[in-house]
Image (cartoon, rainbow, N blue to C red; front, side):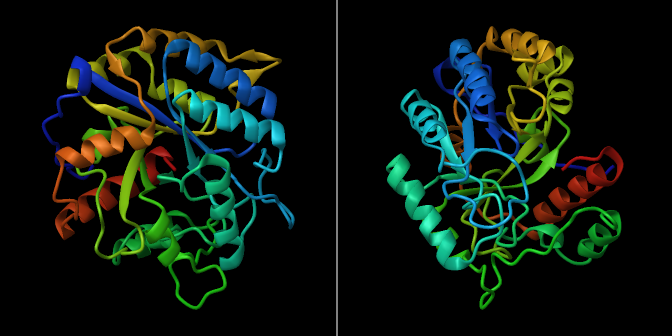
Length: 314
């Protein structure tokens, strides 16, 4: 397995021992189940990030899930923001969009939430930025192509000037942080000690962050199992979980039992439970300069590709 450099853990605010948060993509998430999950998180004292689609679907969707066209869902998201959660961006809607539609979607986001999004995560739309094989640089790009052969991979053009879905300049102007690599380690910061970082080879994104694999409730609960919680605390690390709260977290009107138990256990620890943007702002203040080197980029790309090929991370 490729070697990854580590960094001394930062001192977390308020004397906290570690940091933990979640970026929740909206795929497959219904209004009622979303309310249930977020009410549970709020009662535990956790504040995380909900990714949304601000615009309505005007063509055939590529994913189920609510958008901000639903007034009840939109109102719930606004209420979450008022309660200290962050609202993030998962592209304009649940299908590919043109540049004009993307700008209108960001304008709608600003109208709903009184600001541009600070954090985003690519959806598998045409406008995804530096996505698919462009997540890595040559020669590792060829390895990625082989590793993902036959899977739903897609072709993405968000950074390609002249394409109808180009919006790289808008992304750079209006969004601060974009998610890329996903690792199995609960300590995301140990896997990506430079986050948030700027990649000079991908100039349309101001700063990138990594996440820990938890795309559905089974993967999420594996990642935050008791022994992993203990290690995160011992290392003084930071975890940014990647998930979809629409993927198995509510069963028959009840929260998944293992998820409930593990999150209750985690919440009793001395953690700093803040949204993704707050955590990244804190790290950024402590980790200038922001730009990664070629050697650091290779380290991230090699580890991510190894895990994607042999552990099935996202």
